Amino acid sequence: LLELLASKPQGSGFGQICTTLSLPKSSAHALLATLLKADFLRFDLGTRSYHVGVRTFEVGQAFIHGLYVVREALPHLQTLCDTINETAQLAILEGVDNVYVSKVEASHHLKLASDVGLRLPAHATAIGKALLSGLSDEEVLKRFEGRNLELFTNQTITNIGELLAQLKQIRVAGFAFDEGEHTAGVYCTAVPIRDHRKEVIAAM
Image (cartoon, rainbow, N blue to C red; front, side, top):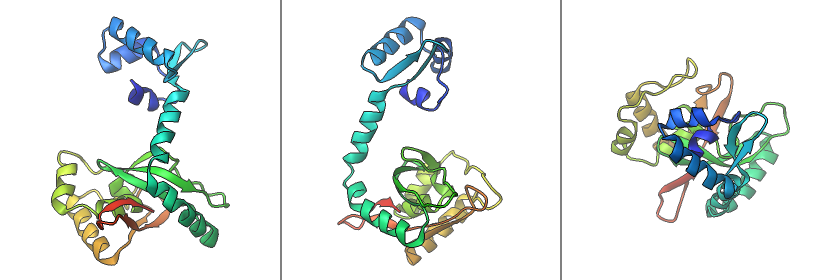
């Protein structure tokens, strides 16, 4: 329920929820009532639609604050942004997506579609490829098994062999790049962040 409503900023009605999730009306009603009572959802009387509530935000914030890498990286993100006046971001890998967990905005007008909490496909972003470079080729193949590499621009990598070849280069070079692969005209560079075991835990 929470994942469904998080994907619908305009909200979703009771009937839509039941249909989309194949829930019996009695079960859906009980679940919605429980989540409403706990403020994980809110109900808009005007549109008769359900939306994610404030407790969802609070729990999400608690997750981010619990990531020590966010605290450690923030001063570096700020310094980077101040130095080159470009947006600096921090992300972690979740499946085949990068999830943004921190961001410092540049002062110019170009805004990136990478708000905290947003997921983007790792194969189409520099930060995602930096994260994927921390995995073995076998693990990358396992994660992408049965999936298509979605096309966003004419620069997007859509072939798994090409992605593996680029990840090999990234491991050697120590950085990744995105030449308008997710958003035309937007170029990014990213580096992996490693823990004390030298495993990639995030990227910026």
